Length: 135
Length: 390
Image (cartoon, rainbow over the protein chains, first blue to last red):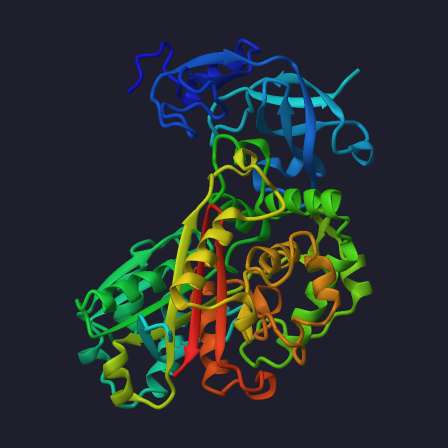
């Protein structure tokens, strides 16, 4: 395993979310950025990686509006999920919060935010990052 | 040069697909196995079939894992070596590859491959949750993603990039339901209109209820053997001449493109090369239409049409029965149903019927070469097979 502290694990990613930080892992050899974090670079297979904090602005690459939701998300439906591209050249999946689902557009600017951990004891006690329309 | 067969299919069976209340997965599998046994009188299953590779996606539907020995046991295959293969919706496509390799290695003479899923004893939100478990847990499921959701992300991209329309997606559903009417084993043997699809309730925009495959109970199986032995067993033979399987990033967002499934392209290239076939050589295909957009992308990934042209391709009628390349003559996952673990070998079952001239009202005239395209998850797994009538 990597000697990086904290280690490049998914659990640590969500601990950073508790501190309102959105973190990727960067390969120290080829500079490739990865979310979720991992030990082996998906491009060059080097195992030297470091944490890199991402900014708070992103762009919507694609999206859907979920009407039929899994049990835990039923109370939120309909809600939007999408893929967000960060200017650092890394993408991530995210819930997209908006008061007007019909106003979503590919290419629109989005802003990062965090929500407290869900109360359902059957799911992990992680906070969640999400994106919303820029104010 | 004529490609050498890897293995030969000498029989096939499927259960009736549908809402099969009161039946366990093992009982559905037995129903499929009985059809396969009846088609092959020269084989004594309990004695001659030495191994079974059985696909199943999830033990959560009926709180039952270790499914392969149960299914094989009920099907009368004791004491054959029985192993479950899991690759989400490509489970039995992958099981078929295990069977091919078992035959090619010379380890076994006759094997059974198949798959099963008993889904309808869970309510829809629970089925949605179980299916979503084939997506990444901490990043996709955790962000409220579902399977229709992942394919909807691809649909939104395809519409944005190529101008594909919701009507074009709907036309895939209309075509496949028209085919499904001709398949007595299909779940929903009913034609639907374009208007019905367009007005059906949204599941994950832009995908509506009638863009989605069905939650179905069902099982399928094939009997494989060495090409030489096959001739002694039956006249209804289909050769497997190409197989390909590939992997793409597990998480959708890590891919370069959301309008194509790279693993499917790679698996197809592998199978085309092995069989010395080209897209224009294919007479009939079963593709993984878990959602209508998936069939449109499959046309493009398999080289049936150019990238971005899938919407127009379905409108051209080429892929309908009567066209030059009928796709999903079984009704597809859309109308025949999608009992996840059973789907891969159920596609091959349809091609077996087509290539042995037993597809009755939906027979494609003179079908000699068939292709099956089976996806796992959002395309982290893809399996492609090319078959030839023997």
